Length: 140
Image (cartoon, rainbow, N blue to C red; front, side, top):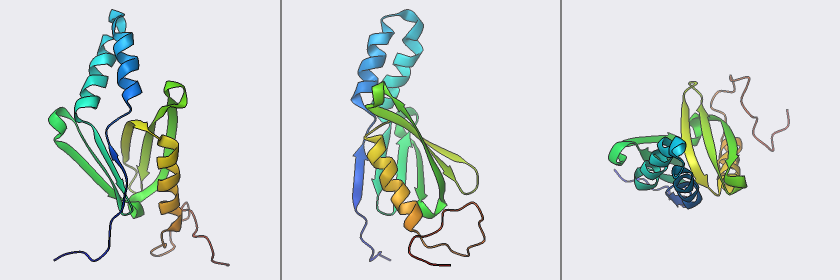
């Protein structure tokens, strides 16, 4: 069965290149070597895909771990700028309390705005959630 709803891609790619460069430079001090290894692993195997319907993250060793969430599952978006604001770490807090991390996200402010728009424009299924963000355009 095929879906008739078109899915537009907003962002598809890996982590910020500045994260890798910064951590390689720090790796010359042996103390920061574990951070350098982490940045190399992220650069090799971490991939983000943000579309009009969902957020997908593949990562882990050899890129075998995959996570997908639709916007109705996202309750909150939290961001922390890194690299003087050139990239950032993002955490999606889901309705069941679990979290999905998007580490070293380039254009993280644009991505955060895009996801927030999708969260706030979704119709509430039953209106029973007291901590959810109300939809715009409806007078009570």
